[in-house]
Length: 232
Image (tube, rainbow, N blue to C red; front, side):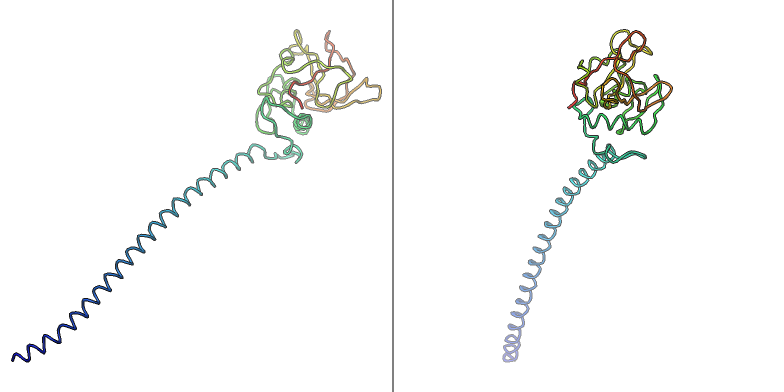
């Protein structure tokens, strides 16, 4: 009887040891799995944070790009050169080439003349569609001064100093309404420099190219040459 118990006990001890080893291996495996899962979750969370930041940055950049494209898009009938030239800021310095390109935008659109209505520039800002509003649009001003207030933005120059993008007009006191007129100089029309090409907003005609004589008159006022103070 005792011998049987001893043999039974002897057989049980290896089995218990084997069970203990298996349990230890299972515990180690579970620990490693939990660690891997924890690391994976941490890495996934970090990746989500990074991707979120990248998405936010990319989204902001995309929004800026869309905004830039909206601000400088080529409208129907608009020349590609105009888009490249539209680089000035409102009321900021502006190149002569851009002044001419902006003026041609209205000429190409055949914008009708009016002292009371407005029309957009290439970026959507609206200007009065008379002669001084046309000049204000070409200069990329923030509003449409009239011939009385336009001298604030320009300075007198000599006829011999005229270059494309300068203006010629009857400006100052007493030139309001139909008593004043201003045009953009677009080069000399003859060798004697007694006539010159213009871009202008003409009553009854609209935005157009024209030829005028030096010292043309509007009533008792004689036209003089001027240069925008911020033209480059």
